[in-house]
Image 1 (cartoon, rainbow, N blue to C red):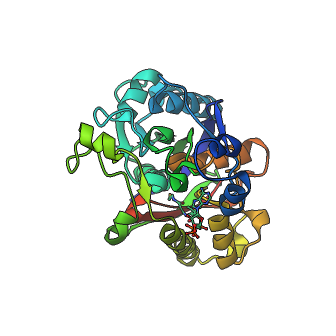
Image 2: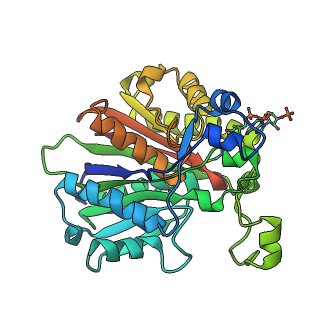
Length: 330
Ligand SMILES: CC(C)(COP(=O)(O)OP(=O)(O)OC[C@H]1O[C@@H](n2cnc3c(N)ncnc32)[C@H](O)[C@@H]1OP(=O)(O)O)[C@@H](O)C(=O)NCCC(=O)NCCS
């Protein structure tokens, strides 16, 4: 069977302008700038204005990615939106985005893998392009998480923010050097209760009681998630290296899920790679779940850190507990 290679043709990202800083949070909950910086590396998170939806952020990022790729929305074979904060349960956000882009009648679906969603979506898109089934796929990671955060819960409200990032993935032309080496996707549902958004589904439908109890907001066991995050991302990176017969020294950049600077530093240490080879972009965004990796990647492409021909390792973990890696030559 003929096999094709997947190339990132273009990327883009969009961040809402409104910022919620550590000093703003000091006035809302019992916390302080120094604690948040030392424990997370975060100073500010972005917040979409009222009346702006996840599909709007996705639309802004997607327009930039398509323009950079030189591919029109009509040429897309599929739109994937990785999100834990869709516009609504139905229709999916990818279909809403398809209409906003005027992308015709290509396939459109959401990926629900929380913060691992972009890596999951990339792995899925790569399979369609590799086999020749599809040529152009728009993959977006987009979140408006602040609407699912309880600003009375100091353990979660310091972490999350809103953002969108997009990549246009396409079939590489013969002779082009870009490729996805491999993707490695995992989950451990046995410990799924470490990070949950309890209400809004069939288990706990929204009611006044639910709202009074704040069950429409995310809840997590931070310290335990921290340990699993370091282990799962380190393991997923090692799995990708082993599969391709490479070593950490062959990786130009690791782009880990941007949840917490200390988690990222622990992964780098475990992986025996200097922080000079790790993309860190969370100080002014916070954890934007499915958007973090592609936002960080697009920033690093635009400022010249990431160059064509380099080996890049993406790795993520998130609610589920989902995790994975995607290893590529850019
Ligand atoms: C949440 C997180 C920053 C907390 O950092 P930590 O070093 O683990 O801190 P701990 O939970 O051990 O709490 C230490 C103390 O700080 C307190 N604390 C918690 N949040 C605080 C805040 N915002 N400000 C000040 N103090 C805080 C705790 O109550 C605790 O006090 P105690 O020692 O008196 O009991 C960290 O665990 C983390 O980032 N975990 C991963 C979360 C994550 O990434 N979730 C998303 C998954 S995609």
